[in-house]
Image 1: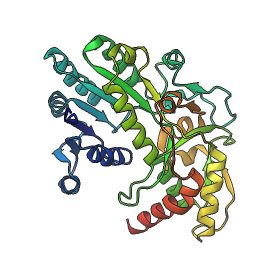
Image 2 (image 1 turned 90 degrees about the vertical axis):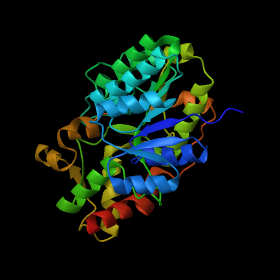
Image 3 (image 1 turned 120 degrees about the vertical axis):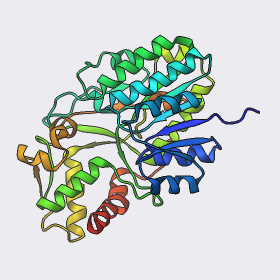
Image 4 (image 1 turned 180 degrees about the horizontal axis):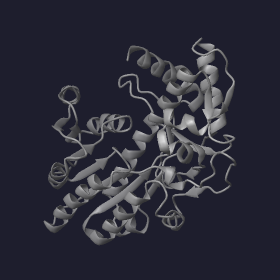
Length: 334
């Protein structure tokens, strides 16, 4: 029986740390890119090799990709130079006649529709209809990175296997990691600072969701599928969504945050209200209106056909029982 393939993992943060756990459990030899020596010590104790660096170390990214059979990128989905460096490493493996797999993490922010919170869009994207995803404008979120990846995959042809996983709104807390969703942490921080939970426009827009631990299992299922699938099949459809069947509106999200913080005595009222433009800089900056105001509805048809079944708790229970208390505690100790 063949030994598990070597993996270069880029971005062992909120999503990637959960993926790392499963890769190590499956006995993959993993090298993880880390930014700080203290992170290296932690990951090495868990069983991973490490290399110090950042997304700006382009030559390092290329070299490590060249040295590993599989590269998984769960870091920034908008950093084109680092992705180009990874693809350069894949290209070197292709030229050397070596097998290569690249799994890139994008996001369903690419489905954004400019709703600005004013309506719930009836359009639901399915990952078994790749032509709908290909038709997304190149100016949409993340597409400036996703499009070049697909173009590179076509260049590689049957010499490499490339896929893009597009998670929706990710939630959930791994008790050992204590890492939080950037979006939720931003919303909780704003609510604590200004005393109310907010939303864009009328908060009618909706997002599909997934628990981070279910998402990590999705990566492993996709990886197993890629390893036994012909490159030509992946070229026909390189996209995988990963939602758990639930959707949340941004107004509902604000209401839940408001109630959790009110009931814990952190704010004086659970009432919610729309963000003003001046609030945006305190939430997610220039991306607040577009990111928190858009509809992003997806269906993970392909993963379910491969046997993926989300099992973790629902988003509202997770926020109330796990994440919001953990975020508040982390902010209090900062």
